[in-house]
Image (cartoon, rainbow, N blue to C red; front, side):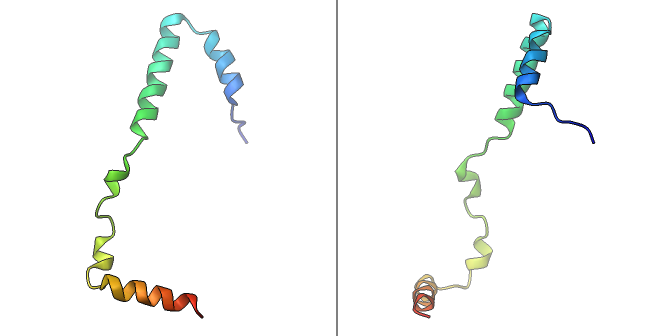
Length: 69
């Protein structure tokens, strides 16, 4: 089983890199981090087909009735 390096070990290893390689590493990490970020607005309309034939008030009423059980 391969051991995963921890952040402190990675930081120490990065200190051994040449300055231009450190800069490349930082830029790569920033790009990767930005690529993984999403906006909540990307979820707009997600699953709307599930609710297409559902009356909103009927749904709320049924949910409230289920709390009493």
